[in-house]
Image (cartoon, rainbow, N blue to C red):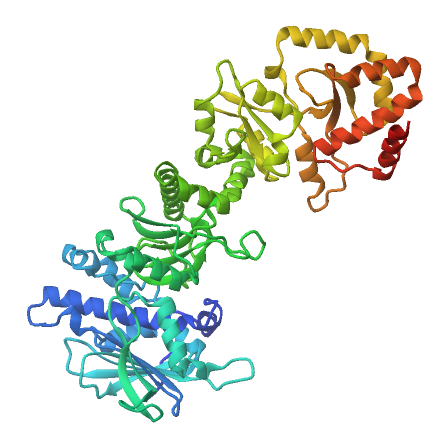
Length: 633
């Protein structure tokens, strides 16, 4: 029989279809199974509208049959089948989709929707993915309402033939004659039971019809301990009903845990399970999991966030990163929607408002569930925050604070009050009378922060101080600026609330009167210090460090250790000397009697202040010698 040329499209276009549209050649199995599922759905629809057709959904199935000797893989179904004209139209015209036509006509019927007819195909090119692995493709089909069957055959771009054939039952059988193996491409892997099973699980596990295959394996003979026999059994490879399609009341916690552990390769159960079903502008179902622990590569560049994306139960993408904001990148899970605008290969999404609407809905749902967890399961939330809180703080800082309103009520900080976690709302609700700022301090550990002279002074005034130990903390608070009308204040920089107006006036007079002494101390220390001044409220501490301007010592340390940080970004450091400490009187006396000794004392006080603030000393040997000289006198 003479070959026919493909209609409407050139040989070059078909070559592009076969070799360029799909990223992974294993996709061919997903596409052919999806087509078979569509055929079963169409027959199910016809049974609803044609009383002469007696078939139930339970009668419909898809079958895989690998043959290693013949190097063929057969995919068959007992769905609606195709007539000769349909074979010509659907397979002879590239990008002509019978499934799309069905969706646009019969598929919109109320009975079809009510009875779960869910057609997957849209573009009419999925079938041609078979040529990525096959050098020849044979399709034998018999329509459900026809007596004759037809055989379509092609080797790809050189055209196709259609001729009568014998087929006793309705449905379609597609036989792929696989390409020869090469050093780079092992096409015979698609004849292996293990590989086919894995591909079905990966892409087509939730096709609503059973995908069956005869599996041969060696088993111990009954009653024997060492004698094996070859057993062939008919196995269903897919689970068919997705766990997220079942009513929440019917799914046990153990089932969610087992699904999560198997699907996302975690040895532990999830910390929280989130179910979401949305209808309307964006119709989708989501099953999300918050892990108990971070993946080993979570804070590395290798980590890829994203949710698995399904369209009508068929996996489209393993990691759709556009569905999760970075600050919720720790969430695992999946989204299933029949309304997605897919690109022609069904491997990636077109960026449209449907996708953005789904992403917004998921973000709101995660935020709501985390707030519920914070309010109702405080211990569990604190454990979650210890693991993923850093990511939420980065989310506050990123994009110039665009997401701060979403995240601010999810943040926790250790405070000086019992050294326990506190939310910003809890802090504000229990602020001391007359307090108008939210105080914080940065340091390596909570214990070291609590020992800072300024922190001790704030606590003595009855103020609670937030202890910031993560590099991003202070940057995040600067991006927040304020919470509930209360500005954030670094106790090592902003001490306005810790001194009275009378004390401020007295300190101003003290510093003006001793300006020459303070300048001498500054010059003795050098360029490392921006200013030296007397202060009050340090209790028993002789000195401390503070800063002027927006850059604190903590922020300086963070910036200096970033990639490319050369130490050129410096905070304007201030050495504050406790005017009520005996060291203040000693400094004044030495300025009159022994300025050489005062210069040495100034360097020692500077080193002491640096150590208290957690800074390194540039010349520790010099400081050690100065201390020894002082002790030897």
